[in-house]
Length: 186
Image (cartoon, rainbow, N blue to C red; front, side):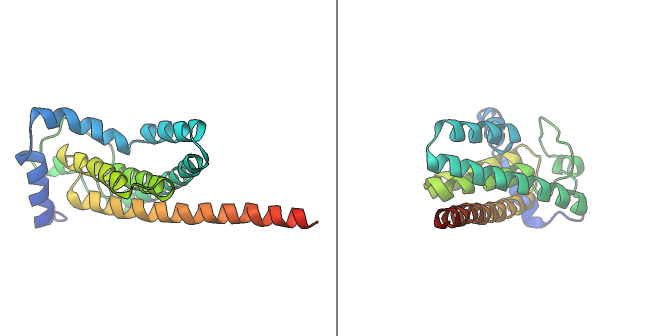
């Protein structure tokens, strides 16, 4: 067993990956994990920006900002932490696919929490977005691609990226409004 594997990590991984295993979840979980991909977020943000109103466009800007921050930070952390994926070190872990790179933090969890929490800031419905992000994280554990602590670290990083993106959005709006006010005074 890998030295970074903690008891609770192993227990939760076993529950989601082995105990809950079923043909239905084997079908559903890869679909849920798509909510943590770059392709999903680019498409969703484009739809929100092109077809939505002011709140949807602002939500798309905040989400994309959070996703870019999350991508670079999670990739840097993966290189520093260098934790192998569960299926690489535990023989009983079920996995239908392999993933490139290291395990901690979960990039899919970072993306899901950064994106869905960003949407919540402008579109409301906090429980919906928290549940969707959590399902992406659970799918990564079920699929044997991440430890629960990887997903938790990804969730925390994703929320921090969403909060940072919200502050950036507020600064950009303030900068634009302040400049507009100065132009009107002249």
